[in-house]
Amino acid sequence: MKNCSTLIRGTVFTMDGARRVYSDGFVAVDEDRIVGVGPADECNYASRDEIGGDGHLIFPGLVNVHSHLVQGCIRGMAEGTTFMERLFGFYYPMTGACDEERSYDSAMPPLLDMVRRGVTTTADDHFTHVHKRSIDGVLAAVRDSGMRCRMARLTLNDKDAVPDGFREDLDTGLAETERVKSAWEDDRITVTASTIGISYCEPEQLKALWQWTIDNDRQFDIHAPAIMDTKFLAQRRGWEGGSFEWLDQEGMLGPNLISAHSQNLRPGEAELIRDRGAAIALVPDMEQVLGLVSFDARQFLDNDVTCGLGLDGPVVAYGHDLWTALRSFLTAQRLGDEHRRRSSNADISWTGDEVLYGSAEQALELATIGGAKALMMDDRIGSLEAGKDADLLVIDRGGETHLSPPAALIPNLVYGNGPNTDAIRRVMIGGQTVVEDGEHVSVDRREAVQRSDRLQDTLLDEVDARRFVRMRSRYSWL
Image (cartoon, rainbow, N blue to C red; front, side, top):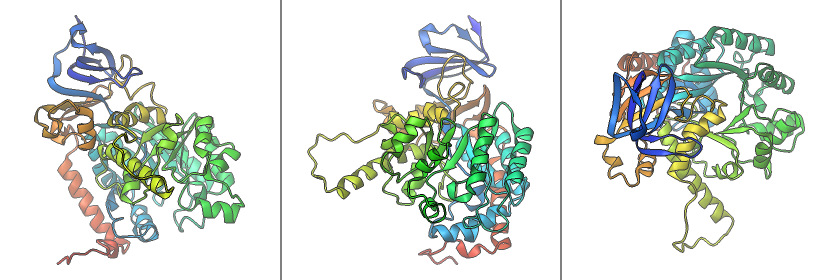
């Protein structure tokens, strides 16, 4: 027998190339790496730390490919507001008022939301730089949570899209990116440069940010198309094509680019993304919450475009729950398919022979190995294979009524919005236990909630944003 740090037994969902599932299997972890995976009767490992057994499910850690963690202080406030009301009324003002300490308090609750449900890696797009060390507060919260993070520091400078005080010149943006990179990069945190979208940054400066990512072997993260792209590209840049066509013309659409949202494309743009090797961060939960019935992941998946699932910011991703995004991927896609079918005047009668597009297994792939590939990390995470980093989730199914009986285990898990937190036996990142029996091992959840509550209450008065609370509510708040 070989010794290992931790031995886990149960049903193992490897997410490897063959998508092997060992109904009675094991995962052996030694220090920070997986050293063995397979059927239980082939296990030749022993450990003093042995967990799991009958009724336990073992998954790779989930991967969230898009978020804005500093938005924790405005969680859910999108309800009842227009885009412009929230962007300029409280989004920019409240997040802009977050210094390093406040950004820590703002980011910690959504981080706990994720890691306590088995998310071990997150991407983050940070564009609040009124206080230059706001991003440091977010990264300090990330480090204390134990999660992996691909942090993109976004430089904004277009006067028509960004208010005074939030704009940066290119030299400042890149200098600060270098500072953050030097201060925070380690085995779990990487830092890159970007901007929100094409319409938030002057063209030459946008290209300079992209060039920095090429020179530093980093990922270029952009929202495309952003909400103002069509208007700005046509009126100010004389471009009548699509956002991806523009990025391609400028030489920026390539394997290091990941684009968030990416809906309502022009014909042929999905194929262009595939041909250039770029990746897509699908954000179905936000799209569905905002009623965007045109959501279409199929255009990418049927063209073999690398895709992962993201959450967006807590202002519109209310529970910050990636399991909800798994379900939303399927429901948003099917509603979008039906919308397109009815809009095309196709025969809408049911015959009983229809199989709806997508599956719970496909959704789970997007949240694990798909997300790892989208963030260019699949050599280290996303599947349970010997040699990879030991990022994994262990679920005790024994008390989960929505996962019983088990014949349709994966559909019940995905459509049931995942496991309850008290069923999370363990979350491990790099071989270290960060969550045990549903609770973070080192971060006080109740203290995080209290600090977050106090922060929002202070900010609402400080930037005169209280008028947006419960805007257009039907209730009488006494």
